[in-house]
Image (cartoon, rainbow, N blue to C red; front, side, top):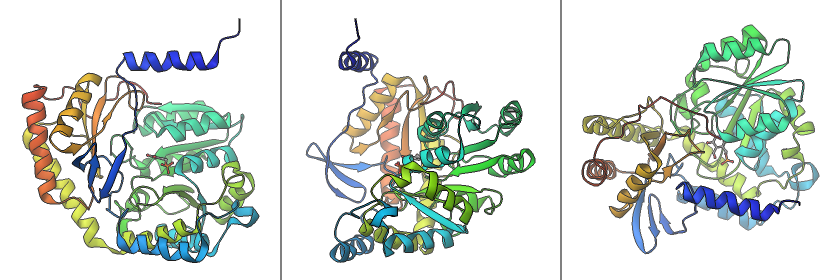
Length: 407
Ligand SMILES: Cc1ncc(COP(=O)(O)O)c(C=O)c1O
């Protein structure tokens, strides 16, 4: 008899619940920077991607409002029909100037941008070589493009070289997160770029978590590695993290963007971002690029957190980004740690498999320029309480050791 699809889905949900891996969205209310209201209590958030604290910046909100007054809410169509407005074009130009790229193409999300690149560049004859800990959207991008997916151990450029060699004469895209979303560490971008040049492969860097945080003028991990367009021909950046907005862009040569415009179905067949959102992102780019004091404050907080956590003996990842995970290992302990922190006024969601490899559940602590030094000190005190009183025994998992592969 034919299996009932909805019944199979319900069975899988029940299995996930039994394993303590069920995901649930929590409804936040009344957000004021890093303070949110959850179930009637005020909590300080340490798990958002609003690294520069721009999501509620009055200048960006005003840019959105002004543009909405002029252009309305929706873009009303895909870019290639009549959805492409002055605000989109202006944002693309600003992103090009910031990252030192020739051309840019906006997508409605980073997920769609990654899918679009792989789908336009690769087919069944192509190979996609990827770090095992790449974001799910990059891994799925290769699979959905029908390419041969070859994964290498985390940040192992030699492993990448072996996988590239094993692809023989297949055209190859080597794709890596610039800053890894769950670990916060940076890819060995210079080594990967040299490898791609030597092996005639195309390098793509997803800098969702590097833009605004790393590099000169916050231009990202690729700029920090001083790699121009010839070395990193495909750069993906998102607008929903340090820029506090939503959407994404792929940057590179005019030829790349012309090609994506024709063949990236995730660009062609979808409604363009609201022009007002593009105007807001444009305002955010200017602040993220020029406000060095804001970035310096974020980096001072990162240093303060790392120093405090080290004094407590908490295992820290090799991360100089705003993502500072504490790998707990066991799923139940990660959940208990998250709940304990919440009871003490902090929202730090536990990240569990399959988002991270089995055995590496963690508190993904993220810092924002909207935090104060006092926020960091209070979080450190709550972490001390969590790991000494409520679930005694410091996390056992070694940071940087990844025992499986996320999906
Ligand atoms: C590395 C990375 N790439 C891509 C994405 C997807 O971006 P978006 O949220 O804009 O779809 C994310 C996060 O969501 C990410 O962490």
